[in-house]
Length: 67
Length: 452
Image 1 (cartoon, rainbow over the protein chains, first blue to last red):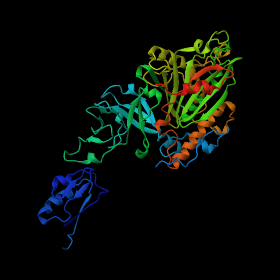
Image 2 (cartoon, rainbow over the protein chains, first blue to last red):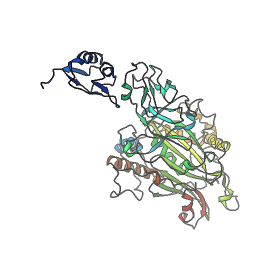
Image 3 (cartoon, helix red, strand yellow):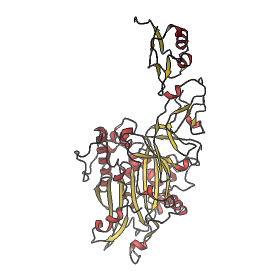
Image 4 (cartoon, chains in turn cyan, green):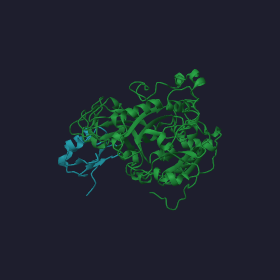
């Protein structure tokens, strides 16, 4: 699992941070920071929820990079 | 970046000349990104009277300045904010907003802004939302002085210290200001304000009294001297065989003038005995002036101020009201609740043709109403390429040259003349009767220097 955030879309709604605080944080300027771009599978559901909740569709899940 | 040292600026007035249509456009447009609009955005400008936002959490005020729609409000702490007139959410007018608890709250959905334009509350959004960190309205820094709220609307990196004109250092009981809106471009208003020659004609309200100080000599000789703040100039009139009336003005870049009001222009000087500077003395000798602030290309706010010439002397409210009434800006002259005059283009400024035939050169009552009639009557933006400027237009031509120079300066990345408040802080104006064989510089230089 790999997460990409499009900062041109992000508006700082922080719904991702609410859903998966281990992975997402909205900074002081109101932009999302992905704390862990390749989170463990255990967080898969939370990340999926975060992506679904983003009101501006700024988050995207891509395939995990090979180690 | 400011570069001035290696740049040559005007030091003497240019020849009197007619300007081109292209220069006229360059001089008169004030929106963001226009040459003159950018000049104005290098100076602090008055944006409203302090009394328009008198108390913390009072109702906000709708303003339009340099073509920008803005809202002024005084927050709970007493600080005046000047922000975009429309909410960042869906552009609802903040004029209807609630000024409460250190911010202005839009009544559409409750979004709230502080004086810096920062969004501080977004009640309809989820409590976990951090979107307000992203929401900033356009906001300009403000400063209060001289009964006015001032703002700087230019690039932050070019911002100078707040203005420090003499009249802004005067205690409030010694300075009075008013605000009036006229429907014309700012420049034709400035040009009227620095045109000493018309005083002997347009403002002659007593044609049968030919011996008033202002009209006894209708061919003033103008001397203009370029300075760091703009220019000073005098209109010199013969009073008697051995006395001259020297009426001194200051033009402070880009939109302010001061003139001496030490002497009364009215009253018969031919029969006066003794020193005319005493006999003709104003009840409260004062310095008088205007700041003309563009609302947009075709409308202008005229701020008028008077302050006592003598340090420590109050300028009484009732005397101010009397002078304003004589100027056509008395309490009853405004459309109630506005800064517009009842006498306007639609009613021909209530010109009285019988009065005009008998006594008053214009037939219009109110000294500045006469000015407004002419300046608005020219049309919103006068076409200066059609003019025939004469010898008495030296000061007007100089102001245009300085404004064009400032436009060039700003375009080249230089600070325009007098953007630094230090260049105008010691400036004042004076009017004096002097012996005909004297050089006015010798007798007046000291009087052209601030005392407060």
